[in-house]
Image (cartoon, rainbow over all chains, first blue to last red):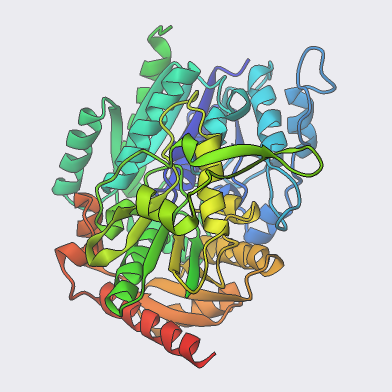
Length: 256
Length: 253
């Protein structure tokens, strides 16, 4: 079993995929073997891990609705070997869902496969990180894609709406039995923004792992569509380290 | 006019849709603003209090069709306009706001409420209502046909590769549905080059360019509608001009 199974969630546009890429890279820098799974029907995680768009789109999509593990037709290891692709940032990337045309089928099957993968032993892998599609349908539907996650990172930006989404997400996660949820404030441009996160997340009963400052290098990379994923931007190193430390703390606290 | 705003999460769909709906209402149209996001959505940018409640389950009734299958329809005596009257809230400028109930828990069973929402939307008459819909970010709902009420799909895109990539995927979905027209709205632009980038990246005609707006950031943090904070901002001016040009076009058709 991977030692940490991490889900990354939050409102659209808050920076889930960017944070997922940074956290994945930071685990690699600490010597961990990382598998990253993109469950967005509109996959972009490859870009944050240093692939080009063409490479991202060429990643084969995981088969749908297969039973993984004991009694199933395959194992998580097999799926990583067959469908995973290496990335410049270090993690092996898997793509779970892709929507090509309207009415071409349902995405639930892809989520079911990811759920199965998280439930299965995956030897030789330390961290499995799942970048979730915005919205909560798949946190709640069919037992929940992330039902086997150890820690949920819920990302928000300095807006009321993203914080409200974060607190809703945390409530659902608790109902699902995900043991620990940590908030990450993103794109803070001022002390006022940091204060905003502290006050509003506290009010919502969420514990704040860290606040990532708005970073010019990330913004430029977003606009250019090419990320140097082999190094964490200097301005974010400290905050990303705090996320990993908070995850480690959460893991060591026995909950449930 | 019936428009649906789609786009990547965070592209600015709700911010633009809220201003769009209110500006359209100021021109005298009877406007219905639709929010099908199960997470907190359009209420903030329209300026109505954010609530969770959707349409109550008793708005629909079950019946058997000719083949003996169980179907749903609006409760007898409840026509779409009456349903809107009853289940919508009124925003500043008189926009009627109808939303999908917000997700609160894993066990909340809301399929009847969703049925009611879709039945109302599907049976609206164009003669009575101008419709401004705000779909959740990403490709999921568009994929399942939630934007099918629209005559014009407005794909909101920032000048970034991830945003135009989503827009391109959405354009493909929209073009497969019955919407006759798909246009891009470039958002958070900082010059003509950004507009051209969105045009090239989405492969769509750009109906409007909305400049980056610092006041919108402030409104987002406070959780208030931009129009109620400051009506004289670049975003408001750009959306007003988008409303005018689409209305003028509509009048010619």
